[in-house]
Image (cartoon, rainbow, N blue to C red; front, side, top):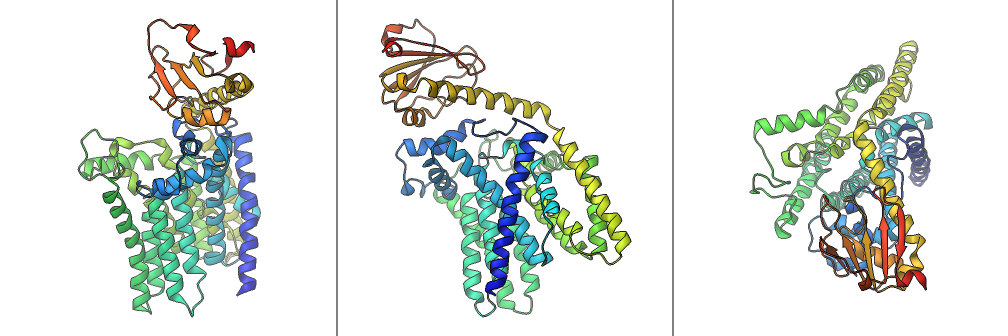
Amino acid sequence: MRSRRRLAASRFFVHLFTAPIAYFLTLQFIFPKYVALPAAFHSDMYSAAKFVADGSNFMTFLSWPRPLYFETLLLAGHLGFEGSLIFLTAILIVDLALAVTLLERFVLRHSIPWWIALGALLLAMTGPGFYAQPAFDVGYHVAFLFGLLGIYAWESRVPEHPIGALSATGLFFILSALANEGFIPALVVYGAVAAFRERHSRITAVALLALPLLAVAVSFADSRITHSPFVMLNAAKDYPYRIDLSLRSLLHCSLYYLSSLIDPAFLALLAACAAGLWLRRRLLAGAIVVVAGLSLYLPYILLPNHINELYQWAPMPVLMLLVPLAWSGPAERARSGLAANVAIAASLIFAILFQSTQYSDQKNWYRVVLDQNRSVMAGVHSIQPQIARSHAILVRGLSFITHPWAQNAEFLSRELGFSGEWTVVTEPGYPAIDTQPHARPLQGGRIDLRDYDLVIVFNGAGKLVDFSGPAAKR
């Protein structure tokens, strides 16, 4: 038993080493600069550092909806802004490595060659919406991690102690639900499959069926107790998280999300994988993977006012497992197996290259925003001594909406050693920043520069073009 566990741990670290390589290749060759870190492409990505700057602690978020999501952000925030982005991206990479490890140990029961694992990981990382995943959709990534840990807890159980394994599995499933509701459908699928395998023990089978439902109950109770904005059954018609169960809405949302997978490259890969699964007698396992993967769209097709290409990526960490499931291991007929492997390899390369050419407009928008915010952060750090000795700072020229002052100026003050007040001029055509404890918007009217120790001016690309005032001359 111990030797098997040591082997499983070593295989996990092999895949954990392979996943960052896939991520590096994705950044360098598939869509360079689109997902490069550390930089923010959304104001929420400053939240981790902001929570620490605000003095939040572990108890702060226990009464919030999705508490484990916010606790994770708080933990990441202690690493600083850039450190938080790297840490949160690491969770995503661990998710993918752990998914491959679970398939290898509990389904295939033999090692997956590293190049096959690399191909599957590249497929996931070039999938629809991945460019918006790193360090952003954190709640889903944390839910995915705890869901996989729950599956591992049951699959690696000691036969003599099923109650302990069921308890650990149930705990991890609940933690998954307290991070995000997104992974619950896959847990329901897993619970049904695990219960069928344990059908010889009615009590165990019923318990396995009940554990995902317990996670659903906890998620619902959490939303009721905390008045969650994410699960509102009677929300107004234009509310972003309004749940719509009408057939028309469900079909519209389903077609939107499924359309990201209905392209020649992915369909060719699916056909090649089906051939490989048939030759290796794994069609049933492949079907379960597809059902579990596509089920992850379910929470999103209920929200017609919150359609986003970001969520098209949701099933990819599961669907990528079709590649090693269909490719790895001997086939009954060697020649047919070799032909299927060649077809899978060719279609996988085609799918990766094809996906990398999609969503170019969205990717370019993210790249521009990343460059803007990277320039802003470089600019303020270049004049950190002048900022630290100031008491009142005026910021001008921020003609884009995702800069750090928009909602999260507190973390910037903490990072730069600034204890005064920011005043941010609202540029024409752009919204004012939120009023914050040490930051305020300034809209229109005459500006008296004598009120400020330092005036910082950026251009539309986020580059620092000028700084002046008494603090600049000391």
